[in-house]
Image 1 (cartoon, rainbow, N blue to C red):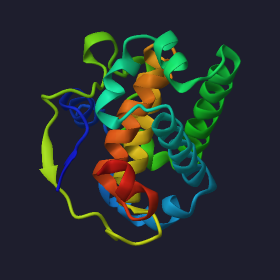
Image 2 (cartoon, one colour):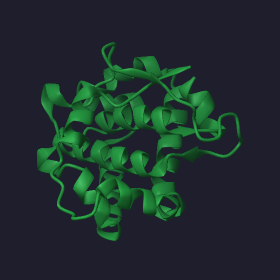
Image 3 (tube, rainbow, N blue to C red):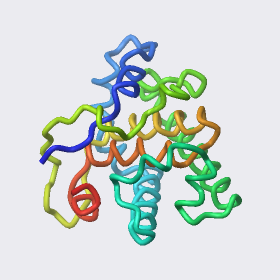
Length: 196
């Protein structure tokens, strides 16, 4: 099956990120792949995403309807059924997890644009018909356990967090981007049903 991949603007921003390491950054990411997957912060990000996917499904919002979340922070908060305080707590936790991952794994910094450099406005990652689609064999399709290509998935989640911050803390921008990353780089468990 075809799955959504990160939008061209996000991919371009990742490709355009300045490389500050002498070592090939992707080789460094491959070296810490298992450690990333076992990280409590990455598992919390995955759990937060699972909670939102479930919440949206319970509210009757299908993945194809996610585009309405990106129009404004208010629309995103309303669609999620959150209060303004819940949205602020989520944003603060997202930023804290991002900062912890970047501090613990400096290899990630070379591949993720800074918050100020994240695309915003019309250049923000958007779920649309013109998103590239590529065939992907998830790591463990059909298993009860979620597995991911952890390096690319974590890089995408950090870039998604940066894009949401650049968009004024709009959680919808994060979820649209993170959902695309989830369906592109993960499989098994609840992910199979959420992405199909």
